[in-house]
Length: 232
Image (cartoon, rainbow, N blue to C red; front, side):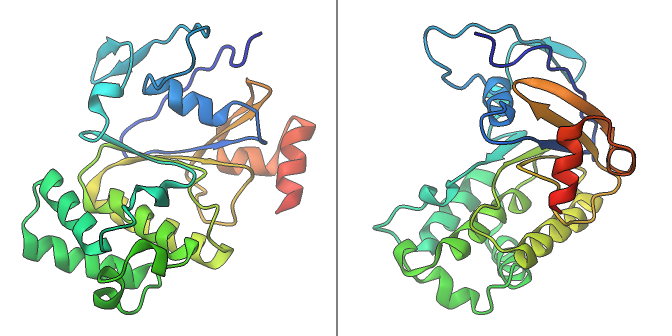
């Protein structure tokens, strides 16, 4: 059984790629395959990645250094027995940031993401926050680092539309000065301004359409793509 077949795409510096498909279409499996995550002992795949002009078999060794992946239910990264501030302090050490600079940026992002009292929030335990609040805390992590590529794999599940727009707008603002590429995986076309993005529509493990966001929305070819556009 072929789960993915003939998947090929390119992502350049400061470019945005939107991967869209229904549940079980294989879109999240694409991300897992790129990083060589465990896919089961009986699964076989062939992968060719060109990164920095070199052909490599996986992006795994660059994970956490050049790339970061925020997936579904990522808010489970917070240890229930420790306050949130301890997690962010560990993250600061890993990213080798100066404390004053890091704290200032963290507090600013918390406010931008709709969390009005950063000091109080960071002094709480994970179980004292809602799922939406924890998801926003996870989503600001990539902006605190210096990554070349950020993968958001259905990372908006616990957020309402207003907060999704707020988060993506902040990513676009940071992209202008941090030069990262953004790969965003979702079920449908989110109501966000990413007109300069490219779109890859996945269905049953195959690419149905691949091109500019404006072109695909204005002139979709496949009925499945039309249905995703109609949902919005």
